[in-house]
Length: 420
Ligand SMILES: *[C@@H]1O[C@H](CO)[C@@H](O)[C@H](O)[C@H]1NC(C)=O
Ligand SMILES: *[C@@H]1O[C@H](CO)[C@@H](O)[C@H](O)[C@H]1NC(C)=O
Ligand SMILES: *[C@@H]1O[C@H](CO)[C@@H](O)[C@H](O)[C@H]1NC(C)=O
Ligand SMILES: *[C@@H]1O[C@H](CO)[C@@H](O)[C@H](O)[C@H]1NC(C)=O
Ligand SMILES: *[C@@H]1O[C@H](CO)[C@@H](O)[C@H](O)[C@H]1NC(C)=O
Image 1 (cartoon, rainbow, N blue to C red):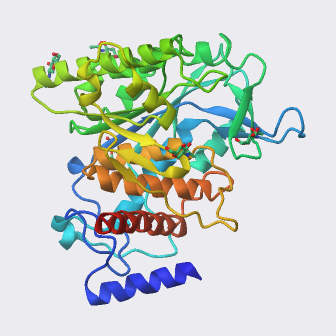
Image 2: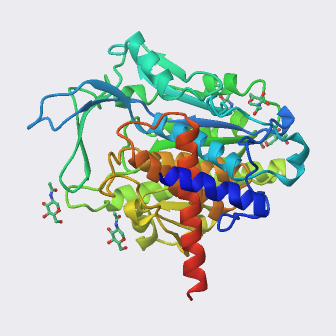
């Protein structure tokens, strides 16, 4: 019902020539009837987005009180790749580049939304991986131009966890067996993915690659920090115009991020910033460094009393604040959340919303969106992920829902500003 209303509103707005309240930036024009896709511009103008993430096998259910559910493909990687694609797809529906006007393309509502230039690279351990898992991973991400690039190891297992939500909707998980030991994540996440990543970008000639990586951070991270290697390889980084990191950092039992974790994470960001600024200087280019921590991680980084370096100033943070929305522009701008369109207004399954947010923000921001536009769309993508039990399907309906949520977020910002 609501969707029909929305479509009607869009059509009326198109007829009258403008579309409040979703004028994001000058970059985008209003939605044109029946033309949901920005036409393919010359290939060399297209950025390529690389998402590096982890795959974890999820066995859903509380290990103490529930029967164990089926194993499904989880982990932040697929969620981030989905988020990047959904954000780009929704952004294309929101508008057109002014210069693309002559290249409009009419699309068929019955077809799936177009594929996206997003490459997903992840390590898997073959000890417990089955061909069916590859098929089910591919079916979660049907919109990738090339199927996920799986870097395999015969000696390791793909980490497997029990995952469940408690009554407060907090995501809980515990690893199975040796999933995070040397046989599992700790060994597997040391795999060098660089050859495979460089293969994937071989035919992309522009230096406008957007690299988004989910990285284990802190003191003694799983995989010994080697998952960050791509960020320090000049053959790759010379080609990258925006490098984005989703840091994974867990609080201790008391809910506090330890002093060691905090200072190791800061030191790591410092190395990233130093490395990229050196490259920028010798190559006379500019690179965006984006970081999308969750709120506890960001607060810990900010609260540091250590000799304050200016590293934080060189990083653009997009802070994920759960049901509060997100915070951009060095903590100065709060981007409100989208209202969930579920029966009780609560998430059906919030797992992965943060990963999807981070992928969405990186994809949009790395390809020309303003911070605010990127965050509105990313909040919307995160909300829509919460509305589905698993990753949402790749359909026009889902993308329209992302557009609707992004417009809602945008309109809340306008109300807040005019109310001041
Ligand atoms: C849910 O939150 C309440 C209030 O913060 C807390 O007392 C309770 O222990 C939490 N329940 C679980 C299962 O964590
Ligand atoms: C980057 O990684 C590739 C692939 O592992 C390697 O061949 C190359 O030497 C590395 N480049 C630099 C500058 O370290
Ligand atoms: C997609 O990425 C490939 C590989 O880098 C590149 O050659 C191509 O130009 C891009 N095309 C589009 C339509 O985005
Ligand atoms: C960029 O900088 C690196 C490291 O200093 C250097 O090896 C490389 O040749 C430079 N590339 C360009 C295109 O200037
Ligand atoms: C929302 O923000 C408040 C105040 O900063 C904080 O206490 C609360 O934990 C946040 N909620 C979530 C879900 O993160």
